[in-house]
Length: 295
Image 1 (cartoon, rainbow, N blue to C red):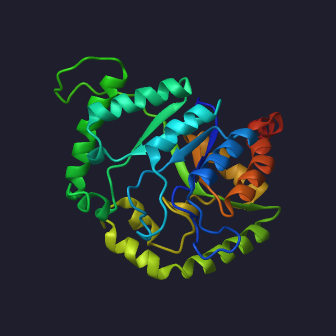
Image 2: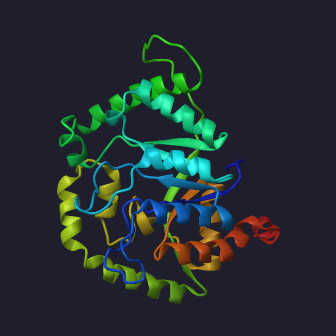
């Protein structure tokens, strides 16, 4: 059972909607202005963390806007005061010495609210079009392991001659999930079916994404087993239901060791607000703790 506090985060809309691109309730907008407003709203209503995914080109459709991760993370670090900022990083795109310096600077700007999300790459064109090449699955993970061992030591203030065997960290666990929650399970499922129908209209875009993705990536294997809403596991976590149903599911995950829930919503601003108002009190308040201990 996790002894760490329960925390909630939200995915920044760095490349538009997470569930469906044909949704009139959430027009495509991956601009800096929208991302800034979203993160400030998330901080104001009580979210603990935000994740800024990294892509050099939009993974769904190349001519669509794509927010740049690291300059945005630095700006958000200066604009916010409490929320944790997690920046994704693909090791092949940055030398570890350069990245460590950037990370330390943002850590300083944020006064200790910065973290890394290591992603060993799945979208082939990003690396191929940069002239880097797209290595095999296991080779990418081996490269990422060596890369993070260097970054870990440098960000700890060490001077080193790299030997590739000094990296060690405590394990802490998070979960990515798309949330759909309403007063009742039936209302939540109705909203779920609406998004599934809209997502079906994105079939041509998704076909391009599948063609560009390494088939060995576990995330994509999971998503193709059955229809899902959202990315990076989406609704596979089962956070679709009434406020009480979703709260109970979150408490179960937390008891199993999940500390940080990195969440996706659509429409993003209104659903993020709904979750904060309805689910936060059910999992963070005294009543939720009493219910868990008695149940």
